[in-house]
Length: 286
Image 1 (cartoon, rainbow, N blue to C red):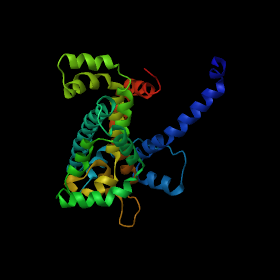
Image 2 (image 1 turned 90 degrees about the horizontal axis):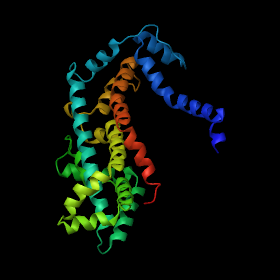
Image 3 (image 1 turned 135 degrees about the vertical axis):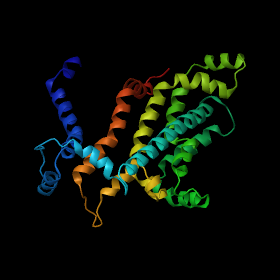
Image 4 (image 1 turned 60 degrees about the horizontal axis):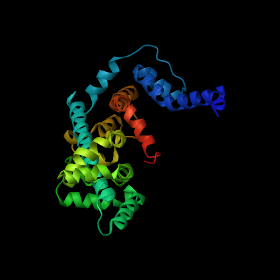
């Protein structure tokens, strides 16, 4: 087994896979450093491996300045909105999902298993099925063109992350919960003092997945946010599209795309250890 793992063919396949996965990022970065003329020529000719003739670092400042109708304010507003929405959604998802999972894993009540199966069944519903009913609901509440439709649903839990938390909490020894109850702790205090600290690997996975999804989400903000002041980074990228459906200033679009990817990359490397531990936690029986 060890000999097969040391086979150079495995390393070659892993290297090939890494190249394929990193190629779009490399291509996007290269185009972002091109001049406007060279970028249009490369796009028109379909050049597979473009090389910039000169490194145009000013494309990044130009891209941030060109977002929206007013210089800089469009990008700064979109950045602030994305940060607010993403942070609140990550916190809401972690708190609500872990709390619901604690109830499903440790609190015995009538119909617990049936409710858990119903919750899991909601994962099979495509987002398009609930898109129109949710829009009508939020419009009736007067929340359209505000950040509330993007943030509030996160505080009602996510079926996928509730399932992950429940599987992890079920492995925690019952003696810890019994000792806490003997000391007079209620379920909320047990959840805050015992469950959350022990669920750090799952919390890291939840935070990374939720952050990446919400930060890059385009459809939901496009539906609910109509004014430029409420736009997020993903919606702000749409300002580089022409009226004919093409892309103008492709080098600036690629530069802004690189900028929007930086927080996701930094977060992943910062939480890499906890993230990998969390992926393997579900495969180990306690």
